Image (tube, rainbow, N blue to C red; front, side, top):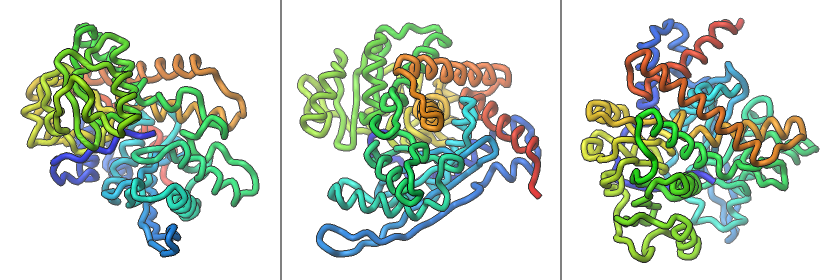
Length: 424
């Protein structure tokens, strides 16, 4: 499952323009060839679909969805599908670009893609959700496939949604095509360790960042915005490593405890009540307040544009781990850098999900599956390498960590572009 949906007064920053600004900064540092820069600055393909879905009451509603492929020079496109009432083409384009850099940062042979449907899935019945998913899958089937574009779960999509997409594609093909999506249930070709991969990656990166910053995890305080799959798993694993989780939140609100939270108990409370709100022994805190909580480490695990120029000056954490995609705007980044805050960017911090998605894709293609301990070992090796490469580039170039990570990624994609050349 994907990060928890959280709505805050984050402003109206355009995620696509933010993504382009981040790319431009890296291109400037690399003195990138103008022709290559113009290629990488825009998505290669963008598909908009409007499709009908029959509702339970017999009525028909038309939904709008997207699938964007930013770049495919290093391999098939890879990226999640999100269901959210505020999905926009601009957002999907940005997420696709970020996926390109994330795959390159980790050395995975994928390009970047993303998809989305403008819908609040919580307002649909299970049968309506299935019909919407199958129709959307059929509409984007002109783009997706194991060797072309492999979707995965994202905000408000689940392993079950991936199973419906896989089945829809398989029915059209006349045989099972498990490698068309990742993040599936184990019973239809999913991978051990995939559900926890994003959160596990965040926890691994947290330890690596502490090592580089010469600080002890034990006793370091943490706030997690977005207590969904990624946020809750990251919080639990970080607690196991000695971090003290002081605050967590979801779409209904947040909780804070000066003594630290029992994450397993909070998870059980949310499963029982539907939210972290009301957990015994805590005081309520809003999502906006959580971002400014008095903690050492902040983990934004919700949506993009949460840390902006309007609140970056009040963030008290000295280390930010971006478990969500694009949670920090470029203007906020500038403020955080001036204040000496270390930001581990999304393209590294939350790369655990795409890394294990890659493992799932490989396992499906060869019909040979690995044990979970092997998956976790491979995940740790790759994400640690991505973090170290980004950190070293940051120091070598004298730039913030995000720009160091982008320099590594953009250089790899640019090299592949130049080696392949321009067709025809």
